[in-house]
Amino acid sequence: MSPRDRLRIAVQKSGRLSDSSQDLLARCGLKFRRSRDKLFCFGESLPVDLLLVRDDDVPGMIADGVCDLGIVGRNVLAEQVLGAGGEAGYRELRSLGFGQCRLALAMPQEIDYTGPAQLAGQRIATTYPHLLSDWLRRSGITAKVVTLSGSVEIAPRLGTADVICDLVSSGATLAANQLKEVATVLESEAVLAGSLNLPGDERGDLVEMLLRRIDGVIQVRVSKLIMLHAPRSALGAIANILPGGQQPIVMPIEGQDGEVAFQAVCNGAITWQHLEDMKRAGARQLLVLPVEQMLA
Ligand code: PRT
Ligand code: ZN
Image (cartoon, rainbow, N blue to C red; front, side, top):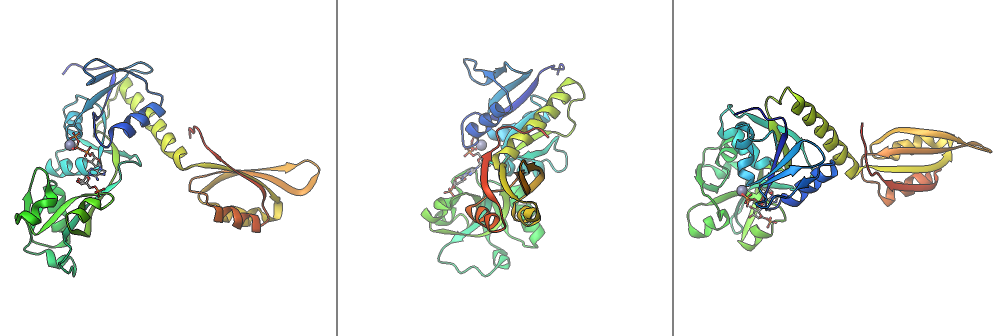
């Protein structure tokens, strides 16, 4: 394959990860021109183009050098990494904080679950045979893995399996099929995947820049700027209440001896309880603001 000078990122064309993936890239400052077939979108703001594909194709496209980065569920990536038996040419670079779900084992509601040992000798239906086999091996359980291409949740009713191993988010699908969740095989969310060896040329610099921007975007999602006034003597107690507070700035207030203005970026949710606790510790005029952009 001839060398490319533009970076390529593959994301899911249509599905659960599409909107959030494109939203993340937009927040990183990437703008794309939509082409008519919509499979290839030219990047207008940076030399970074977008490929719209099936999620399952993302890891292989990275391995083949068709693209450099991709956004895909950890469940898909980890399954293909195991399937490649140590030969995978890609890896997880970042977890992205959307598309959360878990790969879980579930069995008919009427059966009492006593623990993993109960799975021994059972037939377990899944579309994730490598992840399931790996979990069974690590748990010291010998069971029969029945690989299906879809509609796993009806396997127990059809009599083709005793237990299933499938993705769960709200649990509504399991409940509708009279199944209950009994164990977690993998906690999953959307991840940024990239080649084991990132390009050494300008594309490598672009990857590093994108990673920095992605880190910033993920960070500001949970970050808040908190500002308050307090007696200097109360600052220690107030700082201890703040969730994940970082490098506070403390400034004297003109004409008010012993009083300071305090501001800090917090990397965790600030609740009403936090505010009340800080007020009790001596804080006044508390202000919590969203953070728009951040570059460490
Ligand atoms: O067409 P393409 O191959 O690209 O899409 P796809 O149909 O293979 O994937 P898609 O869009 O369904 O899912 C893409 C990714 O979203 C998955 O690989 C997961 O990483 C993530 N994700 C998050 C989920 C779910 N939540 C989810 N709930 N993927 C699937 N489900 C399904 C699950 O399989 C089950 O059928 O939803 C059902 C369970 O949902 P609840 O809410 O009833 O528990
Ligand atoms: Zn798919």
